[in-house]
Amino acid sequence: MTNSLSKSFTALALGAGILTLTSGIVKAQTMVIATDRQGSLMNRVGTAMAKTITDNSDMRAVVRPFAGPDAYLSSLNKGEIKLCVITASSVYLEVTGKNKSKKKHTNFRILRSGPNVLRLGFIVRNDSNIKKVADLKSRKLTSDFGGHSTLPQSIATGLANGGITWDDVVKVPVTGVVDGVKSFGAGRTDSSWGALGMPIIRQIHAQNKVRFLSFDDSPKMVTLMRKMMFPGLQLVKIPKPIPPLGIYAPTNLITYDTYLMANKDLDDATASKIVAALWKGTKSFIKSSPVFRGFQQKSAVTNLPMTPYHPAAIKFYKGQGLWTAAAISGNKNASKFAQ
Image 1 (cartoon, rainbow, N blue to C red):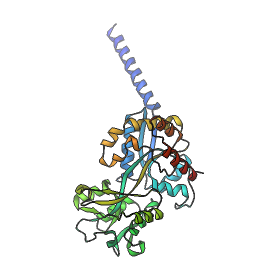
Image 2 (tube, rainbow, N blue to C red):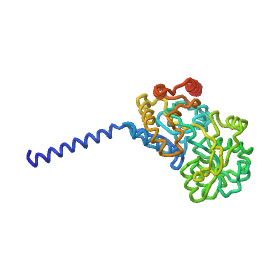
Image 3 (cartoon, one colour):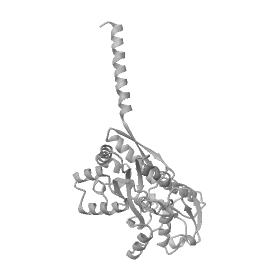
Image 4 (cartoon, rainbow, N blue to C red):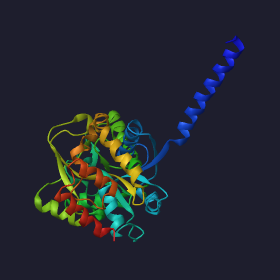
């Protein structure tokens, strides 16, 4: 082979390789996952899930941050957005019509669930004389949270745990949970609502130590809180101090399930790929943050879903032995919301 012919052959081969690579990229299916804005825990969960899906399938997943669920749930309900990472409390408001629009949105299906990812409560400065929820009376507290319909009710429930209401605090309106924490960090409020391990809280904590207030976990109080908020609310105890996260003594925080949720019309093949990829990548996903420990394989199916599971997810979890009688019953109850 002459030198010129050899060069031509090499160029053709390289061109073919580039064409093949480009073709592969073009054909790769891209899935967008809606989350809360950057700095929120839901954005962190979504980002880790997107990486897990990309690493363990032939799809590419990317995150698209929004101000909050209110900004994207209508699009998800219409199928304009296919996936989101969201809390069970937000879904409950949508499927029951207790949201801002007062309209039921029911075109949602769960792909995977995880407990105890969100552990929520009031943060105060560690050197503050606010020691319990009742001490928030007459103090400045972030309020409104335009992008999150569920937050004002969540906070009202938290305040009730201390025997007070919104009328007992000085409300300082903010546009979202991240903005609320930033307002607190800037000294404009005495307290704000936040999640354990939330990136923006950790940033503020590194400069000026914060502390989470503990909730009363008596059965009577838990019953009251569930009645005020939604049936899936639970209190979880952080048994030992974790100073880097603002826990200095045994502390009870509010928790509920977190979902990777899809529009109900997401095709079975794509849904199956997503569920299988998350299952395969569970170990690396969990290792990426202690906050994600609730996303164990055994916890992928919750017995108290606020919307039904996607048919492809049900089929997959049946194969893993997770679709138990309790799961069937829970899914049946959730289906009543979706009617």
